Length: 326
Ligand SMILES: NC(=O)c1ccc[n+]([C@@H]2O[C@H](COP(=O)([O-])OP(=O)(O)OC[C@H]3O[C@@H](n4cnc5c(N)ncnc54)[C@H](O)[C@@H]3O)[C@@H](O)[C@H]2O)c1
Picture 1 (cartoon, rainbow, N blue to C red):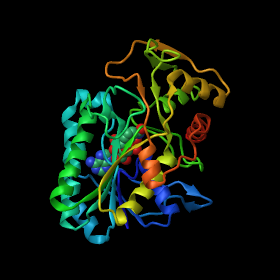
Picture 2 (cartoon, rainbow, N blue to C red):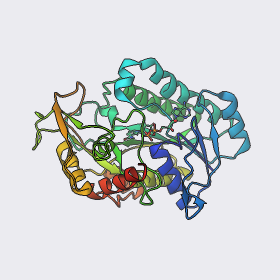
Picture 3 (cartoon, helix red, strand yellow):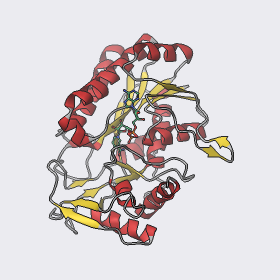
């Protein structure tokens, strides 16, 4: 049995889907209910879920008492970088404090394996791309720092208590499950692909391009977009690795290829079949020019393989889901 915290969120629902497909038993723990779409009249994510906060010790204890967990996949957290700058306390309380509460419960119940949702934000403004796991970690906002703190806590728990962990440092999770039943919805939405697709859906008048004077071929920033289903599969591999792991590992998780903001918009225009209004604005402070994952470590060590690394396929899958929400 695998406990998935944050399993009701964008990435969490896709992770749950992958675990189910691989025959694993899952329990979701999230402060909001698990979405319940139907496929051919049957629940698409047929797993038990607990609606509770990580800070709720009693709910955590009841959950760990009720089920016997082999490992925890910890996705729960607050994720908006700009909000973390304005309200750091919220981020330290939830991403660090909530994480500590989870680790303490794991120790109380002897569950000593965890897969953690970390982030490329650990690397701040990197000196080179692709970014390798051992490149300098220098987060430049509270969000990134909370993730780095939790990774360091995992390291300390490994040394002192023998906890084994896999930290997956996601680059830009994007796209949606091929069923079109689950997809990306954040509130507020800050991710490029949904923001772009909300223009043709008339949910916003235009999409902003932050910075057109970067040292890149078209002047806009470059990111590594990884399909959420490929990202989800990495969690299955990480759980399997942890079954007899003697060593904890950190992996960068991206496609190893970058696309500019303008390329994403052009691809979306092609997929949607309409032009998408943009407004060019100055760079945002703290936005790196290029973030691209060096992904050889996870490919070599866990035999991870991206199946949907074409930007067109990623945007098409996102569009299918977004259209279905209207
Ligand atoms: N989306 C990305 O591109 C990206 C990139 C890097 C890392 N990540 C990390 O991946 C994880 C999931 O991201 P997402 O995009 O699916 O976000 P999301 O907001 O869709 O999902 C997060 C889920 O965690 C739950 N949650 C938050 N705090 C909680 C708490 N204290 N107790 C219980 N549940 C709580 C929320 O209700 C939500 O369902 C996060 O930890 C995020 O930092 C995401």
